[in-house]
Figure 1 (cartoon, rainbow, N blue to C red):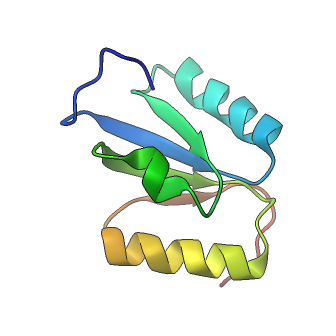
Figure 2: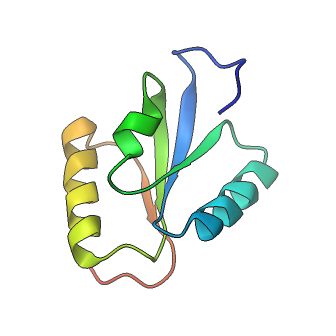
Length: 93
């Protein structure tokens, strides 16, 4: 996330344990001329988000069922209206 953003700006978050996969997906989203995109691990997404407004969440396939269920519950508690995209093969939680 760049230094020119303010706390009112929104961000798209990519969550995956595999940092290379997360960066790849981040680059694809940025290529589509999206606003700021950040990456995080499942346990650090909230810390990484900080004061930014979460616009959407992309979840990579490298999360365990336990991590995915916890992340989805955390997002639901944070804001149940956040669009969530599961990338790759995930079983329904």
